[in-house]
Image 1: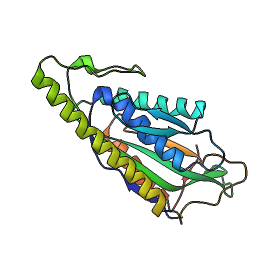
Image 2 (image 1 turned 45 degrees about the vertical axis):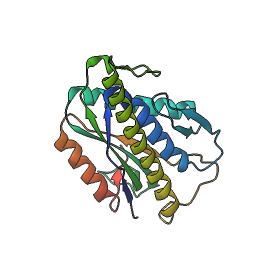
Image 3 (image 1 turned 180 degrees about the horizontal axis):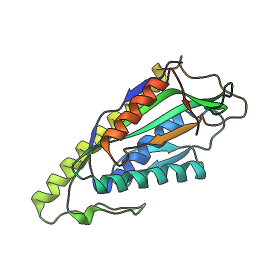
Image 4 (image 1 turned 30 degrees about the vertical axis):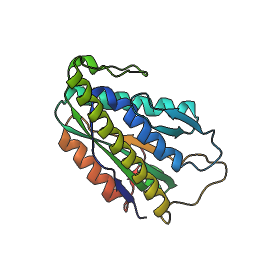
Length: 217
């Protein structure tokens, strides 16, 4: 099985922007790969003049938020490092059991790499609130600088959203047949582990196993 890979444009964000940016990107991808009936829900970003669509699934929102929390924790422990989070779609297939394998395996057919460069700013910007507001520095020049920077981030985020839509519209042949009654393809969200090298090796293995699938643990 071919595994299509999409490397999204790198975004330079501040710590307090991570949550909204990742929510926007991950939910947009999942929504465009949803199969069955969903309850589309428009979500307005608080930090940017952008509206995206969620599937209206509480459990899905919870799972994505949990992964974002893990990612933010990793970023806090590894400052000044470029970060990557991967959203993978896969099929679960039965296989002939043997003494050293399970009875099922994952066939990865699509992977999305979200690339963030988190810039270090004063601690006042750091917040885990779901409704974080922009903290504006005093002074006219500081206000202008922040407005200019926010506009640049917003433009870059829009580019990423268009990149997602373009990829989804152009890459269709690799998408597996739809099973009756299924709303979402199985997916997983992975991120850096305790060491960059381990994460890199894990991602290489996933790429290789898209042809020779990994086992479902």
